[in-house]
Length: 341
Image 1 (tube, rainbow, N blue to C red):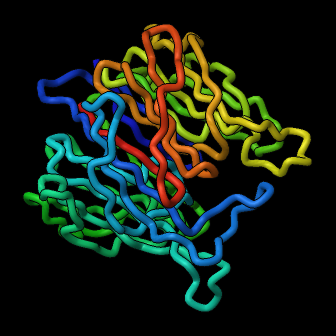
Image 2 (image 1 turned 90 degrees about the vertical axis):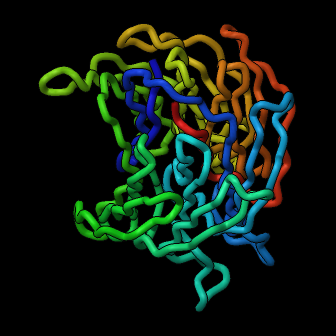
């Protein structure tokens, strides 16, 4: 069985679906935000920031290698699901939720960018840039590659785009609430069975949790919850659905004098046993880490770390996580995705 990644509101979401035939992707795309640095626990705009970019990574290589870096708007604001790759790996979509304020270069304001990247071009390149909505954040493509949805944190809407080939056409917007409602991501689940959500508390040293939701139950309900630590920023289910990776900030994004500061983040792997999650292993990573991405076969896990401006490569043998190198970047990696089976 395979899982579909997504998120709703302040939650990160993964929903379980039946496996269908088709190749599983081996490209990972990292969206990198040059406008954001962390200074003693405070998100700030650096002087002379590097350009936002998208890094295309070959997961078939050992170790994974960069095959392209493309200039495109990106943002750390919102969930690390600001990238979506078509199932056939022919194109990808990347959102840009923020931009530097034209009136004050030390601040950012919401942006509405949706970039289309042609992955079949050599090298991959931007093929189009569209307007979505203010605070364009989480993005998903349906399995048929005919529909894309974008959630807008700053206007309370979701944009709908039809897709023909690699061409996106705006269809309309779905209003979910006012501009303070903050929809962050939308997941497309053709036949959901369970969902896994990472629940973030107030950011005050909370022992935050990951919960399993039985979607087939009527009504749907939480059936299992596991404590994982401070601020589970991103989650990713392995392509076969056997494991859940959770990126835990662990206080690494707080000021050093904060009582809940820790000088490292954590990546935790839990085994998926029916409707339950069983803690399996963990590894230390960098600071203010964001998204996670598995390789096919579950042998490699990528973890984005904003402060270090690197993607940590972790090897996994089914029992333990071990450091296996890193990919250095010019901007902070803020969102990542692979093609979903």
